[in-house]
Structures are given as structure tokens and as C-alpha cells.
Length: 306
Image (cartoon, rainbow, N blue to C red; front, side, top):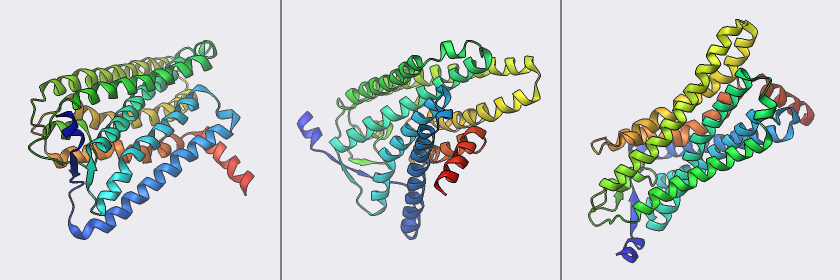
């Protein structure tokens, strides 16, 4: 049965659209993907080349940009191919795509938590910041985020391999995700839903509690200082992070913590678009436009290259 499963070929329905929108949508998502890659890799290069940005905040931001580019590259190229009518994907390719998606998405969740903790230490414990947020701790948090992402992906992938697909091979989605695969399985997927709720739910609750807890202490510290200049600088940095977190976790909570089988497939795809396509393209702008250090660094780089 396992060998037969490995030979299965799925068909991705892709995004619902009218035939006349095929080429315009292809061009729109191609443009979004190119902007995503250029924006995130450009942010990485900017951080790498400016010594003033070699601090924990930008260490995490640079790695977040890499994960965003990775996440987008896992999903968008196949979606673009789908617009050209090649909607088939083998079981092996499907599992590889899901594994890469699960690792990158989970790693991003942990990185957002690490960034919130960094802001908490920087604002609430400024004198101890250099002693707490050492290079070693930053690397450890990055490694733990990646390892957590890999373990999370392995758990769900191992349970997906236990499923059989005898009724339908049509995946109502634009990439291979766990819920659409569960829906077309002819085996009772109760254990898959349980694992999804336990592990995805736990990771998101941990991340959200860490972020909300960190920023609660940050807000209390700002209110105690009563300094408009300090508050403005803090909100410009933390506000961008909170906006990114809100856009990222909203759809994820809806999709994975409450994976009701009655959800409309079209609605699922709209939510998926947020954290697989839109968030990766928006993050470089969200973190850069109101960040004076990043803007100053960009201006210096442009002057050097002019």
C-alpha cells in the first residue's frame, strides 16, 4: 500500500478564477514573487554590509527575511506553474513541498517570538541587554527555531504517510498542505486532526503568549518613562513587528487551530495567501519604511553606488 501511495499523482486545483484572468493573475503573482525575493534578499544584503546593523534585532530580521524568501519560494513557483495548466504533482513532490512549507512557517513563528523577546530585553532591561542578548544566545535561538520547525514538519509528515488516497486525487488548494490532504483521504484522519490541533496549536499559543507578554512589559515600561521621544522610537520599531505578527498569526489561527472540515476550500485558500504570498512580500516594507536605521543604511548604500 505504501508503494502504491508513492506512485500517486495529485492534481492541484489552484486558485478559483475565470479563464480570462489566467494571464493577468499569472503576471500579478509573478511580480509579487520577484518583489518578494528582491526585497528580502536586498534586506539581508543591507544588514550584512552595514556594521551598524550587526545587532541582535537585525540578526533576527535578516533571518526572518531569509525564511520569508524560503516560504515564498516553496509555494509561489508551483502556483505560477498551475496558472499555465500544469496542475499535476506527484506524491513525493507533494510531501517535499509540504515539509519545506511546514519547516519555514514554523521557523518564522519562533523567530517572531525571538524578536519580541529581544525588544523586551532592549527596552525593559537596557543595561543588561549586552549581557543577555549575546551572539551565542542569538545563534542558539535561531538554531532552536529551525530545529523546532524541522521536528514539527516531521511529526505531521509521518502521519500523512499513514493516510491512503483511494477516493480522490484532487487537492483543492494551490499547494500541498496538510488539511487539504486530510480532506481527500479515505482513511479516518482523526489522529491527524488531533496532532494538528496539539502541535500547531501549542506552537502558536506559545508564540502568541511570548509576543503579547513581551510587549505588555514593553508598554508598561514606556508608560513609566513618560518620554515622548523614547515612546516614538519604541513604537516605530515595535509597531512594525506587531503589524507583521497580526497579519501572520490571524490566518494561521483560523486555519490550523480550528481545522473544521466544513470550511469552504476557497476561504481556506484566501487565508493561505496571506501567510504564504502576501506576508513575505510585505515584511521587508513593514520593517523598513518606519525604521530610521534601515533607511539611513539604504541611503548610504545608494550614495556609495551612485
